[in-house]
Amino acid sequence: MNLSEAFQLGDWRIEPRANRLTGPDGVRDVEPKVMDLLVLLAGRPEHVLAREEIAAAIWPGVIVNDDAMARCVWKLRQALGDTGRTRRYVETVPKRGYRLTLTPAALPGEAGAPAGASERRPRRTVILAALALVVALLAAFAMTSVMKPDRQAADSQLDQLVRRGDDFYYQFAASDNEAARRLYQQALDLDPDYAPALAGLANTLTQRAVRFAPGMSDTDASGSRLAAVLRGGGVVEPTGRRQLAQAEALARRAVAAAPSWALAWRALGLAVSAQGDLDSAIDAYDRALVLDPDAWEAHMNLGDLYEIRGEPDLALMHMEQAYEAMSRVYDEHAVLIRPWYSETGLLIARRHGERGDAAAAELWYRRILYWDPYNADALRELAGLLRDGGDMIGADALCAELASRTELRCEG
Image (cartoon, rainbow, N blue to C red):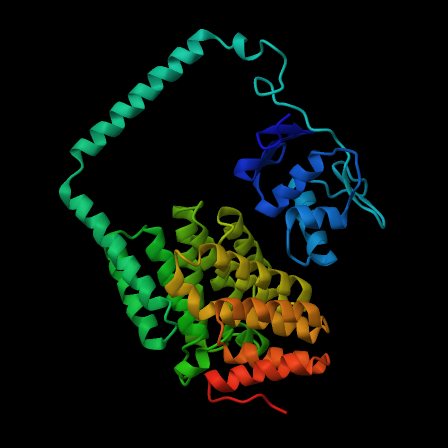
């Protein structure tokens, strides 16, 4: 049986390509990694898969800790409703790994079903389906042929306004944020239910409350301002709280208008996290990642939230996944990603260094330098790491390179 296609597992219909489960509790979307885990276990039912084997298959080339894997298993159990004391689907075998307790089965009428099952479908059903397709095509053609030029022009203007708004928003400066807000509002004047404009306006209001409150300069906006605000007790100024409430309302309208659009869920996650509702924010970001596994900003935001919650392993995992996602889409969004790319790698390297994992830290510093060869911080910090490990020759070589390419010097 081909497990990349839909199959049955107990009460659930599993659709790997759609990352969807359908069963007694309705339809549930899951993250791609969660579906990967389910398919991996289903490929060897009732066989115990070691944690190392699972990590190598699902996170190739990435160091995965037990907490990250346990959370993936937990999410799979939640999706399957496998929350009772006795596990019906996914069993933990202490000190060994995990196994699927049921054997997957082919769906009726699909690959692996009894011979002749598909042939028994009534011919009338096929005819009706063909007629429905013809009617739909004719209707689509009719709608296209009568579409007014002014509607086409309005759609083009909407897209242009939102694209320009995005260009300003991602500069993360107070004046640019206000320019973006004005452009998004102009788009909503044309179409009050346009999801990209709703989400964009929500983001600008959140940033206004969190990054650009009165008395805060643009230089205060660097780094994770949200994490700093939440650690300081959150937004308490009445105007800021009203802006966040408005941002949440706009984001929920965006989600209602386009529930399959990842950026709408990310806007919701940003708005509710700024109000201190971390659980709802994590749920929203998780939904965004189900819809778009390359939503690197959602991973970065989750890294901040888990750090605030005191879960450093999950925080680091999401930062690493953010970097991987940025790498996958860098060529498409180079202007947006470039300011964050090396900085994210540096943050990851430093976190590994703080944990005492010098090998992982060195790997990440060298990864940064592969793509950003003269990054002064990476050169200097890697030199310090090598010196602490006794590699004086390697450290001196990096310090010499730093001195030749910049005006900076290694410390010590």
